[in-house]
Image 1 (spheres, one colour):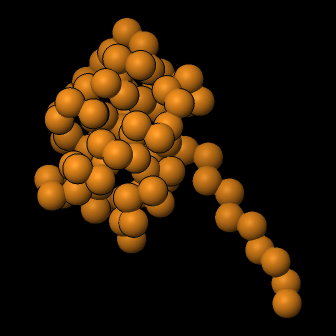
Image 2: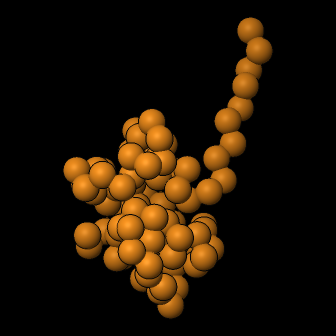
Length: 80
């Protein structure tokens, strides 16, 4: 049996995996917010760039956001 490895590098992809979403667009569903919060708690903010955090928050909320640092963006997602 051949072993395959799935490489997930982006924050949105990681959140999609950790929340059990089949599609990235599922992250935009408001009923997913509790599992998104738990997933964000398990991710070290420094592991991803500020750009990725800003992009993830903007994608999930559907409105543009810009934060000063990754921790601030992660905190915003946890407070939704």
